[in-house]
Length: 137
Image (cartoon, rainbow, N blue to C red; front, side, top):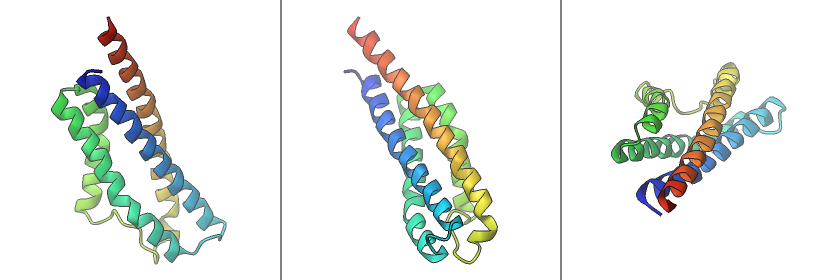
């Protein structure tokens, strides 16, 4: 398997992890809405995943940039820019005192990221299969 095949295999695995992370976020937000979890526990659980999720996505985008996969890089760059903007404005962590006011926005962001990672997963899977087929010819 060539470099492109390995890269997209890694991307498929990474997209699956990011996909499950967003599902976890959405489940936790719905648990807060139904009063199954208190805001402090929610923020403590989710805040430990915020930066690793952003770093993993940025690393994957950097891998696309360094390997010359321009379309994959350009598809991922806006979300990386959005995440960098959130970090620079110090708005990336969840605050237990304001979580109920901002819950709808957080849920909307999580659903958008879930959709993005789902589309990305299938795109990476397609590109991995394409790389494997072209390599075997």
